Length: 142
Image (cartoon, rainbow, N blue to C red; front, side):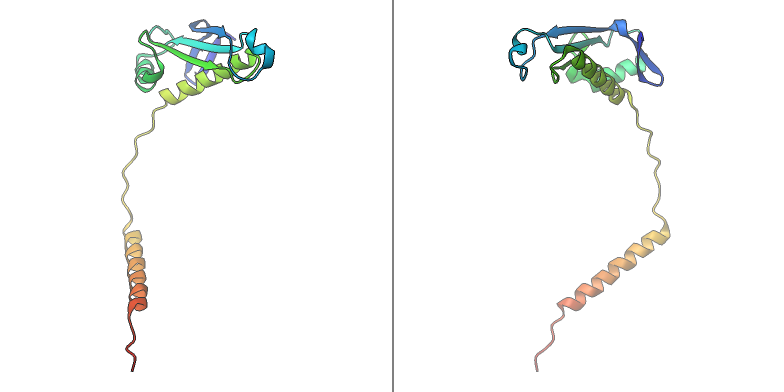
C-alpha cells in the first residue's frame, strides 16, 4: 500500500513520510538502553504534493504550534516497547491530527424559536413565580 488514506478525498503518498528512530525513555528494562523503539514521523506540509492549497493553509493555520519553521510536522511515539507498534501508533496519530485539522464544520443555519415554545416558557415562568410568591407570604398571628 503506497498511499495513506486520511480522508475520503485525501491520500498521502508514503514516500512523503519520513521516519526516524531513537532510544525511548520509560519502561523497558535493559531493552531501553540498547533498542531504538521511539518513532518520530516527519511530514513536510509546505512541500507536500498530496495537499491542495486550501488543505495546506488549514493545516499550517491549525497546527502551527506543531510545525517547525521549515514547514515540517513532527509526531513522536514511545508508548510501546516495540518499534513496529510505535510506528503504527504514530501513523494513527498522524492521520487523526490531519483529519481534525482539515475538517471544516458546516455553517450553522439560524433558526427562530417557535411562538408556541416562547409562550409555553413564559407560562412556566409565571407559574414558578406564583409558587415562590405563595411560599414567601407570611400569615399574621392573631
